[in-house]
Length: 60
Image (cartoon, rainbow, N blue to C red; front, side, top):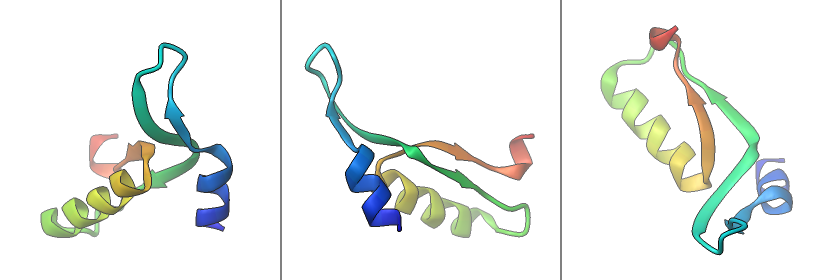
């Protein structure tokens, strides 16, 4: 489901022609039970998928 949704909504360039490589169809939420290293790996994976909206409980 992740690949299908990402491929269906992935934006390579914005209206100005700038490369953005992102998707806004998938959202990620972290947990306070994760330590710094786990959060870093999780965030790196989400960024690699092109996610824009990555949230963590510690910020709220």
